[in-house]
Length: 264
Image (cartoon, rainbow, N blue to C red; front, side, top):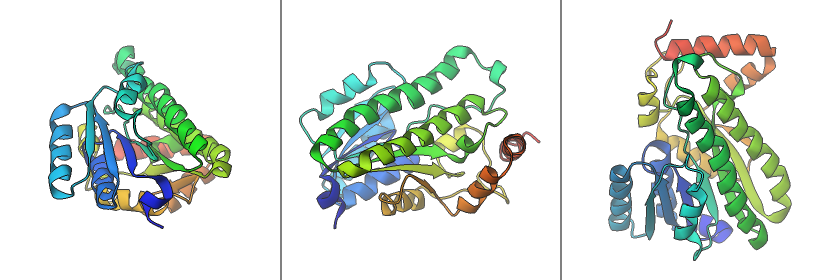
């Protein structure tokens, strides 16, 4: 069964202008879905939309929007209330800093939380609720290996991504009787502009970066394999972290963060 037959012909990608979000957009368009792309920066967003329209021929609606805004869901609905969004991919992370907790103004950390917690919850509640009513749909909440345990210099980002995974786990169980697939897609280091902005080493010998196209393809291939899918062959490392005591997990995660952000 095709993605269109299974979920419908519209997908919304929050954070869909670059990196894995761009890869999801291109692959979904190639699979026959129309797109609603939301991202903060209009330049890359509009360029991607124009290219998909021209090269693939799908309908693409765009909205340049900061997803940490409390009214983000209201703005998104203006673009989508007239179509049936059958797939939601929430990519946005708003966590482009590897810094000590107290070295960053509180307002910046609250932006991360507003996007990952408030924004993600609002989008999942609205679009997931409509999917539940229709009896079909899919939601992909994109998390991070950083959410498996607290990490120094990633305190708020780690906590926010832990929330994303836990939310997806609960919604997977609630919505599967209603024909809605929910997946927490947990990413390891991935060669994206966002990771580069965080100052992470994309060529670390112990943590080689995955490619965005591969991650998106893996996510789409495992939509029905929730509640959690750890991408890019990193499941064994994820199992290792989760097997440790919480104290040891935090120590290892913090050392890993220091290593890939050149903070040793």
